[in-house]
Length: 520
Image 1 (cartoon, rainbow, N blue to C red):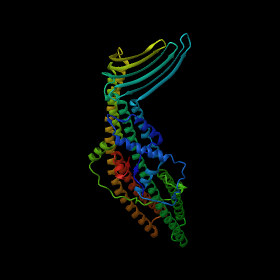
Image 2: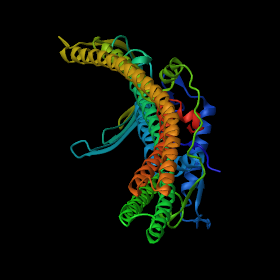
Image 3: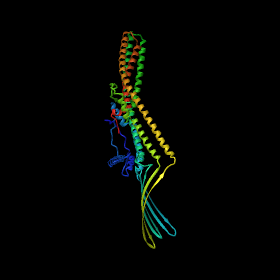
């Protein structure tokens, strides 16, 4: 059984490296909240599962029997199969993962940075000396804006006059008080990356919605084309029988020989229509096969048996306001627009903070230990402790660049608000227009059915008059063409109604829920 679920695939080894790197300092950032250790263990387990799975590419794959017979599908099966197997949809599913990588890039700003240095120096002069030195340190920025710096160094000097050893340490804490202060400012880049990931996910959901609608439309196109073939095959058979009947009546002298030309021409016309209908059906089938992407050695050659009936029962629609409310609550493009508004708020907050002067306070603790050894004197040891506090101030006179960025963020946000209001108007129009179309298509079904019945009566009357000698073969052919057209119009009205419902559910954002498709 096909599963009506769309999964965004795992990031694999590359995503594993990014995830483990972001967790190296013992915590992960998600907006303003920290991820619990249990969640981290779950993430690590999933990552290791992906690595283990991908690490066995050299193992022989089990033999899988690929189906190659005809596909027997109702509408739900077709949607589920297409959602699960279409490669184009898989391409779109990777977009949120690409955006999600930027979250790890933003989190990397809070990763600790380790630095180390080692050197050796030898000096040849009146006092030959050799100096070996080393330094190791670590720096880290915290979400509140606090910067931690820790360093330790060691030096060992050997000379003709004296040997000197020194070791030191330094701890410095710097805290911004104006620009750069607070979690909201320092986590702004991460929040923007998370919002962009959310936008990408809603874009993917909208892609799935359009794809499902495309599959359903292709399904109905195949049914319409095949119904047309059946109608033209029956009409061709009737035309051939009528031509044979006219030939027999001409032989008996009941009608003139001139009646045969119209009957033969009508037969040729219907054969031509049948060829065109078969061509349209083959093209519609290829379109549906492309969307379904069935497995097998020759997927393009597989036969399709569609079990869904073309005729439809007219459904009672709810109030138009219910569909509009559903659209405002569930439309993916509207949710994207709301996230764009949130991004604008974050950008305004960040650029407003950039207008402030930079005022940082710092506290530093450090110490050194010296040991001296002289050739003609006793050894000496010295301990030094250093404590220092202070502040730094920086301000750009005029701050034209900062003011320009802030003003740009404000104008962009105003533009986003107007775009959001315009989108709401467009959604209103789209939903209401789709609602009206469904109502009209329901009326078209009733009208087309009545027309088909009347055309059938007209054809029967013309055929009876022709048998009585009061009508011509041309009149019968015209009535027959009208009846065929009414049959096709009736089927097209049935499918047009289904497509109108499809457009309504697509416009109010409920299509996936109604079709049981989940995007995870």
